[in-house]
Figure 1: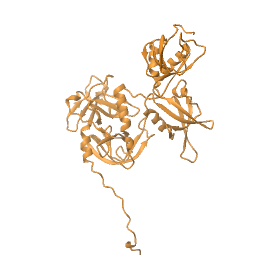
Figure 2: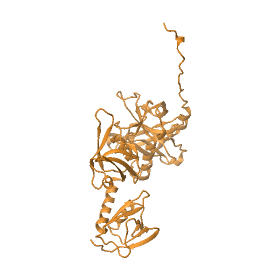
Figure 3: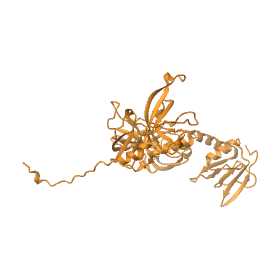
Figure 4: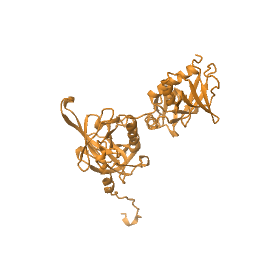
Length: 423
């Protein structure tokens, strides 16, 4: 028999559950109940019926509310209820709808009508990039219509993708109890700061089973700003198809480029079919989902740096991200510029347009000639701020240039173009 006193005492590490009362009290005025209504039988001549409910998070004093797209997309009229029971209407956006949305991230924005009539308390944003697994968090929402319920748990995992809830996924996984009705509500740290938007649960029964997912506040804030500023989320486009394959007997994966779209940013940067993508912006390229998430998280006009393996050698390829529709307009304008004037343009990291090449057979100018390396400042009297500006102005002038100003070695030159360059 072994005596218990023969064992050395082992120190036990413990942490008490933090008091979330401050965090809940701070955030509750920013959490709203959303009632969703639609016309009976879809007939606009009939009255409204309540078709659903969810949660929203007030994020600005101008009355903007962020929620999930799946909360609002099945309705045509909405009503807001604050924590104190006050009911409020929302106003329509210029698109004629009561919300603007980004279905790729499952996020939507509503706006309170006459927000100046209420002392609005927007939620404080926290930094979701600073989260760690095991950190305590809380959720506030309206599960099964039980308004402004508070639950708590810990962060189980970060950066979850390929979950199947949205096209762009970068989820915070938690074990915070959330249920139908919590969607669109805030996930908060112990200071009551927004670190995520609760969006989905993994369930068999339809109720909470220990796995909840939230959209990081960093992504939610970016989507909100794009929606409010542009009515949509502008996203960069590469123009490639990638196939993901796993090494036999290993967790390591290869990302192989299987197609490069003609006249795409990837094609312009020199990416080729068959290239193996090893790194993206200095980090290992681990999966197709993570590469797509990185691309779509970057601003339009920013540069994606890829390291690819080609014929046994590593190469760096830098791709300027542009919207698909805008890039095709730009590509058409640059093609017309070269066909007519023999000029190739590029854009440096500061957004300055640079003369990158001149076809020797073209005689584009009278008097002083353009030179490779000149900074193109204006055409036809219109100041230029990047290649997108050039495409817009050049197209407006029906692909014709009468005058251009360039900077060269610290001096300004104004160049007169032939009215009918050698075509």
